[in-house]
View 1 (cartoon, rainbow, N blue to C red):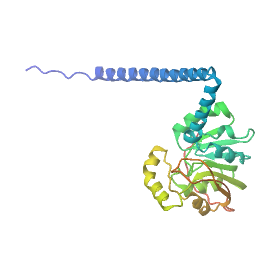
View 2 (cartoon, rainbow, N blue to C red; view 1 turned 90 degrees about the vertical axis):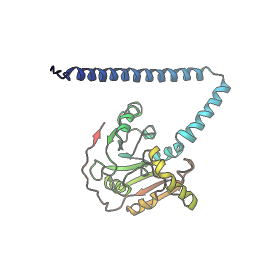
View 3 (cartoon, rainbow, N blue to C red; view 1 turned 90 degrees about the horizontal axis):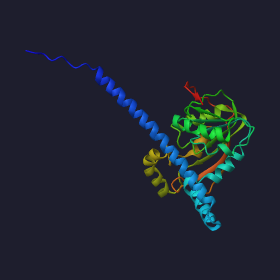
View 4 (cartoon, one colour; view 1 turned 30 degrees about the horizontal axis):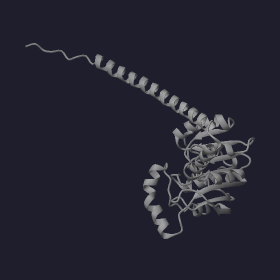
Length: 270
């Protein structure tokens, strides 16, 4: 009886490594091709707009402004007003793609924090373009990696709705604010009407999956007050998506004795 010797697994291992290497090469080349095509498309669109007749350019400008104000960033006008009040050493939490970056005044220390590692990676290009002196930090909002009384202003622009623990995040904001500092916020809150509030509650599970954990039905103004802040001003703003209304732009003073939230976390400055 002739026994067949088992085939050595060396060849199979080499074949798998070869396939993995080829897949990586093809993925890298495809990524470069897609980005190059996107760059060429942007250049072609820009040239077409520049050489278009004045009437066509005016119409395209109206379409662009409508898309930007209604769909891309309906809170754009509110952001400019929010950032105008930021002075001194400024910390913005939950920056995402950091649409407020180019609106800050030059000369002030500017630090951004985001709990999404991918978002921190993507925002570096905007920092190099608009504010090379700014700093972006990867850390959870519930455990900010800064000493107590480190900033004069803390900005929250549609960030408290995505925080995993809103009370802990507000406690950390109070901890890092200096005496006499200010907390500037632009946040949407739960609707007052029973029908609108019910729609927000019903849509929140799906909305949070599509909008990076955003909760439509949070009583954010009440949470700010419960954290010990004194709300000096809170005005409803015009704009925002229908389900994410009302939205308030406000200024709050930190508590006299902020409650620190002890936590040890791993942060990464980029």
